[in-house]
Length: 289
Image (cartoon, rainbow, N blue to C red; front, side, top):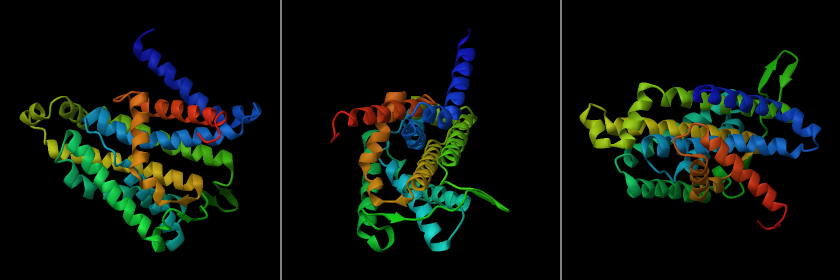
C-alpha cells in the first residue's frame, strides 16, 4: 500500500467515524461525548488558524483568540440587534474576524520571529481589556446570551440547533468545509508561496514573491478560520464572552497545533482531540483540574 493510499484510507475512516458519532456514542451510553466531539471540531478550527501561520508561513501567533472573540460577538450581537438568521450571523462573525485580522495584520506581518508573537499578544490584550470594560456592549466576563435562529426553515420543516444531532452535523459540515478550503489553499500556488516564505523569506523575495502581501493574506485567512471557530462556539454555547479573547486561549491553540503536528493539515484536529479528551478524563479524577 502506497503512502497516498494509506492517507486516503485513513481519511475515509476518519470521515465515517465522525459521521457515526451521534448514533454510536449514545448507543454505547456515552451521549455526553457527542458534545465533546463537537467541541473538539470547533477548537480544531482555532488550532488550524494557528497552524496555517506557524506550519505553513513560519509565523507564531498568540493572538488568534482575538479573532475567535470577534467571530463570537459577530454572531451574538447581530442576532440580538438585527435578528438575522443562522447563515447571515455566521457570515457576519467570519467577516468581522477577517476585518479585524486585516487591520492587525497590516502592522503585525511587518515583523517576524518573537517580535511578531509579541505584537499579536499586544493586539489581543488591547481588545480583551476593551471588551471587558465595554460591558454595555459585550457583557464583559458575563458575556451576551442569545437564542440561535433555525439553521433552515422551509415551509413547516425546520432544522434547529436545539436538536443535538442537527447541531453536531451542522458543526461537522462547516468545519469540514473550512478544512477542505484550507487544503485547497495550501496546495495551490499561494500555498507554495507560503512554504517558500517559511523556508527563507529573502530567497522568496528574490524570486518575485511579495513577502509582505503574502503574509498578510495568510494572516487574514487565519483570522477567518479563527472567526469561524468563534462563531460556531457561540452557536454551540448560545453566548459570547470577552473571556475567550484572552491570549491564554491562543496559547492553548498553539499547543494543540504543535501536538498535532505543525504543517500537517489535520494535525490541529488530532492535537485538539487528544488534549481535550485528556482534559475530560483527568477532570473525572481530579475535581479541580
